[in-house]
Length: 572
Image (cartoon, rainbow, N blue to C red; front, top):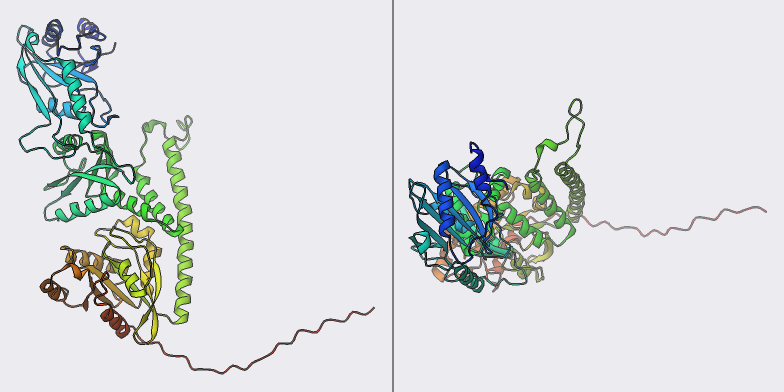
């Protein structure tokens, strides 16, 4: 049987001795038998390298590997376990030549790989075993609950010689499995997408808490159960894993300890970073843009909305399609150009590009249709007033209050994706068209801006913008600035606007009175879409700021009667 690990330089007799270890049967209840420990220790001292084996629950040796004098690397065991928080069914036995106990890497492998048990055998200068240092996973107190700061996810067994370890391995593993099964979280059936741990990463001078909190809101709207949040501020972001190798290992241990199967990052990941993190963790890795796209896909109802969301998703996924063997790529021709032809990766990329081209044509048709509709509205002389603002600020609820409509509204982010147009009668006995648009968010992904440009262009036809701000949100100023910045990026900064401080019914009187002062330089009206407070002031502001159209002179039209054309006569 082939020996794994660092086998270069091994003598033939040592290689054969290692191969004979494979397939041996060990007692299931003993951590490591005395004779097997002596054999491992003698081999390890002779080749001056660490030697390790993986033993299953029946006692059979399934893998034999060699490391260097300080460490040994385990094979790829596909860390994504299929049984939730259960154990893998393997125990790892290896040697330590310097007399050291279990290292931090050993304990990390115990938790990451969900091993039944890990044991290190210290070896003396004569090649005899001294002590066995062992550890097993410690079940959490409650599923998903954070551990106390002084409690580790592993439990150490007191070191002892191999023949004096008073631990029944079979009984220990059965008790751990029973306890982990009892603590396995119950997953809801409807709307459940997984258990997520949030990761906020920021460089110096960048806000961090707001991003993590907003990421949690997006995760809950996407059907994820947030079990923990981790924040890190770095002087320089790691170009490979964003958080660094050590922090990533600790993060995976924390995610597995909480029973999380999704890692959410507050920053957008490059394709290389996403691949490196997924390869190192074997967990589902998502960034902020992917999460927003998923929420958009859940909210899209109309055909136009689905086209725009699918286009944004394909544009995001195209550079993240990866293949396994670049040597099978299609070559340009000539010498070496014959052979396997197109790989499946290139076929997938070609299909994605073709689908993107088709969606762009459909989106161009949507833009033409909306342009024709805007021209028809302009020809009728009906002014347009657009509701803009941060997502979940209450725009749809305010539209229903002003126009007595029943547009879908809820306490969720990006509830409205498709523009909703309703007629609004103002006090001067005239009508305007009130339009509800998609909600904004900080650092809106560029793919979404490009895909929803046909929808966002509806704002360009507005004569007045009503900027809805969630007054009960402690981050109202920052979110209002984000909306203003996005409007300037889209070229709509020149349109007149009125700030509506919504949800004032949730604030005490003194705070409510001081709100307009915080938005100096712009007309601000406190309003409550739920109670109707301030609605009359909004209608008066719209009537005052919308210019009155010049009435066309009345022209009397003469009634004319068209006679049918005479039928031709046919001669016989």
